[in-house]
Length: 346
Image (cartoon, rainbow, N blue to C red):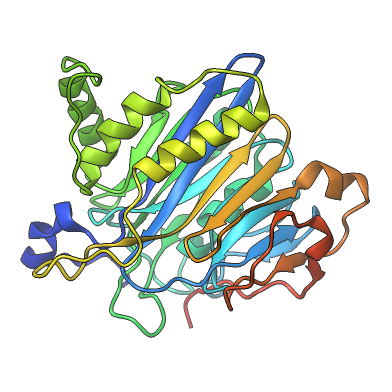
């Protein structure tokens, strides 16, 4: 049986969790919707950019009980170690983000048993492959036709515990979490901010408290998740609201940078404090995916709409694992590549 195991020490360290990401959704005039996030991790987490075409045949990577599907939508994604999709946007403007959540506890799952399964490495990709809107995804996930199955990150003692955020081109939002083995779905267009911990229900309670304290007077400034949630919630609604894509993208990046952790930052006695490894902003109106590595001086982007106009039929990738430096639009730098193998159960 496969399930999340918690120790007293892990629970005590929730507010200092090692994998501290932030996600925000910007809603400007003229349907200007952008989703930005940071990836914070306590160890290096190599990221590459991938573009997947429609019509890809996939399975859940958990043995004979894996679910199977064919992708309906092309997508641009960021991988982690080339074993999982951590972030991405599809051609319909649906965005999926995986963030760490220590409290996650997934359903029991027996390999090759009667219950269908999906590896957590494919959770975000499954959403990008199959749905065009948040409402459509929520309706499908509520049926619980399969169990999300997790395991340790290969070569580490880190048991993968994440929650999934979804946003679409209309500005709708949903947060999906597994708590005590049960799927909790929080669905509302107003859910524009998410951090890694605590659970989203508790994050909303924190926001309600801070709504009574004017952000222009005082904002909490530490790197813990609750403080980042408050700062992101205030700033994403306080920055310039515009349909100028360049300005809106800069605004979202500025909020994500404000809630990031300086590179290489550490405090004695807190070995799990995370550094921000990369940031991404998805322009859901124009279908452009921006990416910024903490080790690169430049922001780069992939214009998915242009790729689709050129009849995208094969998987392409941009290798960033050796700290390669690119600048601006990188469509021309993408290379036809065999798809990576998603991590599952052996």
